[in-house]
Length: 277
Image (cartoon, rainbow, N blue to C red; front, side):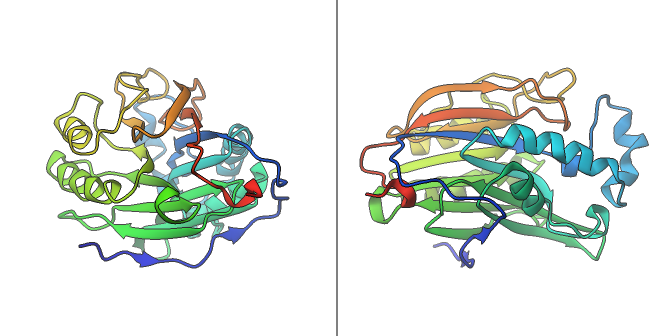
């Protein structure tokens, strides 16, 4: 039913991997970083619009602040990164964040290229080696939306983390979440995270929950805009087998979105590569 393309194994960043001592919890973060643009009011969408296509040095000051936050987590899902184009100074932003935050593993997925000017991408940073990463092209009238399926462990007891950035239109989101719902139902232990461009009580989120039995501990917690949050469009959802210790929206207004974090307890049957089990 699906036609994903398997990527190579995740890249290795300039950092040291975790030791083999077992851990049963994971600290997760999802962050739409707006390619490192610091937005503090609506009018800056106009006055700073050039930063979406041209390089500017302040971008890396903001990315350093973002990396400082990310360094506190085990696995990070990144939205609105850039795979290395003119606007990022031809620097792969996901790789840059991995190096600055001390993550040994990273990978990214480019969903839309605009010549040499922009390479819109998703990214993952991890302190554990994924056993597989699969790219999915999400359905939509306008191409350019995707999902990264990052797998930890083997077989039916693997943990799958899906990182997404969904369409602006409701019809597009319904189709995309239907696709993701079919994918989620193929696995037992799933975390879905990202900028979904819709609120917790939206028709499309409720439809997904009905189909997959996922839960959202961050229900109703606003993330956008970061300077005066009025909408909860950034989410982390989990399947029933994944126990949540805590979940919160972080007051860290560097992007136009606030980041969301969650600490989960791994099911006993999930074996991470670095568990030594």
